[in-house]
Length: 154
Length: 83
Image (cartoon, rainbow over all chains, first blue to last red; front, side, top):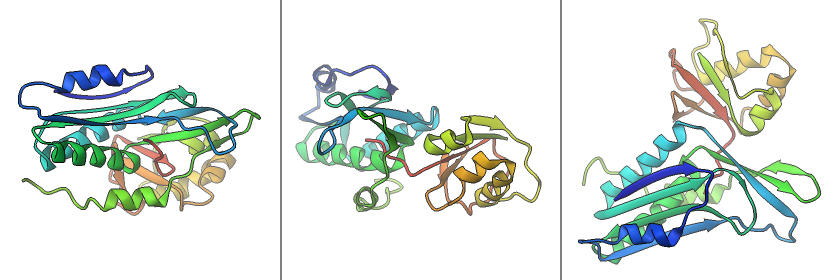
């Protein structure tokens, strides 16, 4: 079971997790990202822009890498785009494996890499009418780089 | 060649993509940025500082000094902020 999608619609994390169960799977790990209200409030919505075509390729590559690095029985990456309000789902990454270690590590890998290697951009629309583009965080680059290079084959 | 702009680069230039005939001497994304700056004030504003500019050649991330060749498309954008 493998699913990679970029979509405006919401996703149902429970239904997605259920699809990852199955023969040979011993555990499913997942991460659901939610639009966070900024400190002090005032965020009306995020606008998520992406590079159609390149985004899908980048996410497929991350799924390939996770499946190369770990023994997975399933893998899902879903990223929403468009206008998203605080509290709404924005991203979902999940991995299934025979054992917890691979599922947990692969899930962390997917979300860490997705932050720095997939062409998405966030703009914040504030309640006072201001709007600004979110700046990339250096800490995200370091977290992604800490996983090291993907081996050619395992 | 199709040139695409995203996020605040798109806003400053005022369009999301365009077809451009590049001069022969434009051989890297950085050289392309220098040439784009001459096309108008929106371009000059978008590319006033190239430090926060990233690029993808035919939808693959590449450094600004990568050989450009003559790809189908090149995209310019700020550092990504998904997740």
